[in-house]
Length: 211
Image 1 (cartoon, rainbow, N blue to C red):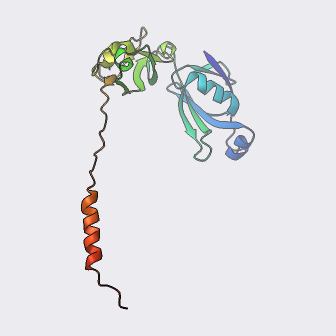
Image 2: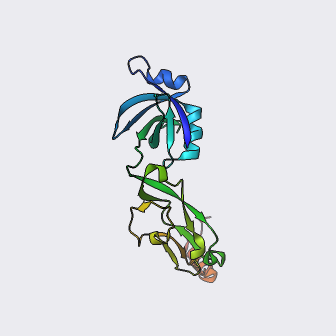
Image 3: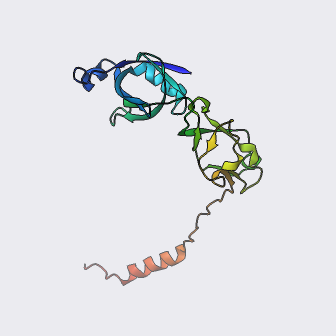
């Protein structure tokens, strides 16, 4: 479990601009059994945790009393710098299931793709429901199932950890092997003789210049 140190934020004393100038990010943590609490987090520390955890791994917040297990619920980005400017953490309760999007990890080798087909990844994450302590960091997609052109991998083909329930239709397509269709360029034949005749006729039709 990843840990991130946070501090309670005094909205009346701490301005957003002063926090960001000091290298911190304003944030809030809330949950079904946790009152909304404004906090601040160190930008560099959060960047490291976000890279490792994503939005599907429990992040334990320290600095609010007892350690608080949370999920990174939403990250707002600055429109100019594309850096995080605000973060929402959702406080989870062990035993109470949550619904989150888990990223897909494509592994293995497709025989169809090896033989020249295109690999089309239809989905890059799937919604699941599980105890927050049982959430996987990613769900693997076995590309070796794509043996021939037009083969498909469906949601029902995913191998899920115990206690993790898929929240999409079992027939939903995850990935497929597609035939490569080459576009043929249209060749327009040019009749140079007709162009020359037309040009010659035009020249003959023009009156001779006056002496």
